[in-house]
Amino acid sequence: MKLIHTADWHIGQTFFDYNRKAEHLCFLAWLRNQLREQATDVLLIAGDVFDTPNPSAESQKIFYQFLHEITSDNPSLQVVIIAGNHDSAARLEAPDPLLQEMNITVKGVVRRTSEGEIDFQRLIVPLIKDGQVEAWCMVVPYLRQGDYPEAESYPLGVKAMYDALLQEVLKIREPNQAIVAMGHLHAAGGIVSEEDRSERTVVGGVECVTPDTFSALIAYTALGHLHRGQQVCGREEVRYAGAPLPMSFAEKNYKQSVALVEIEASAVTKIERLYFDAPVKLLTIPDEAKPMEDVLQEIARLPEGEITENSSYLEVKVLITEPEPSFRFRIEEALKDKSVRLARLGSVQQGGAVEAKVFSYEELQKITPMEIARMEFEKQYGGTEMPETMKQLLQSVIQEIEHEDISD
Image 1 (cartoon, rainbow, N blue to C red):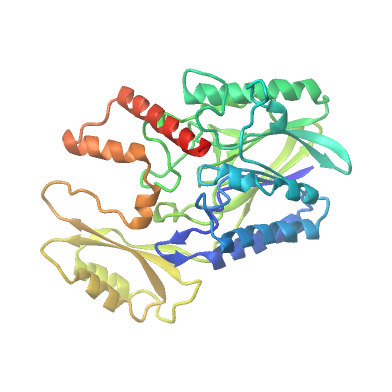
Image 2 (image 1 turned 180 degrees about the vertical axis):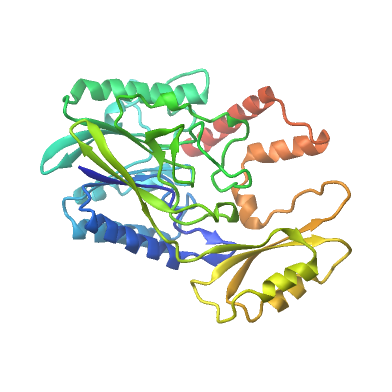
């Protein structure tokens, strides 16, 4: 059985006000070809299909058109999708009755039985090839407070969820059937850029799930949430596929890919990264902020030409050594004949106290409440880091509020 594992598409994302529709269509066309060329049996999409809980009609059309195309190409292809923290769990799952006719399963909401117990059976999906069950998949969407068994902390609750599901699977699987797990979470040991807020990592690691959450009995664990394709703590069979497009300048050096996984009987026999060459590159000049004249010299070396939908996004960093009210105008004038799109212009003042950081509207949308609290605490107390106990208390309140919002 061949599986392709992907995640974190973020369809509908705008990159500093630039529409990324063409980039997403390019990736989906590439993925469609990979599914055909690799004779894929199962496609696993591990959350954050959309960039916002309320995606536009255009974004939804892109997604469902893709599902229609790949299932038309290969009627035996099975697709399993989970909701991520950017998705609306209920909205993503709503078309599931129709999608099941196309051999597509979507899980976003953790439901409970009439007795109030978690409906574990609903989160177990057989993976089928040639009419035979080859593996069982534990399909776990992004978990919010109240979604998992009662536990002392979020990580312990998530572990209890996977442990309980595993016990249910062991009751029904045969020895030659593999066990696969899906999840959208932050696993401890996963590499995240310190400057990257697009993955919405919780400060202090309050929501970090330990790698032992995923039993050695699980042949492969397909994760979403962190945008860098990687193993978790050296475990080849527990990995993030990574995002197909860089979501921020902090991700400009990531290598975009999906994971191709081959399973025979109950074991994984091969894991290979299939690399996608994103059509639009991200450039930062200079690497570290420099005075205006040095920056203008670097801009002069950029390629000239017309701006197209494949022109690179540009981040410019300027070191301000004296008042420079016209610095943005000078940068924009220097870029007039260059085939790049100015996305972000940052300035750093030389000397003096550390200034409060200024965020763009897009960056503000991605900052978590915990990060805002941390920055305010450090500002009020001269750079002192927020105590761990305070982080945990705040995070429990945030999770409770998020859960109430979802329930409403």
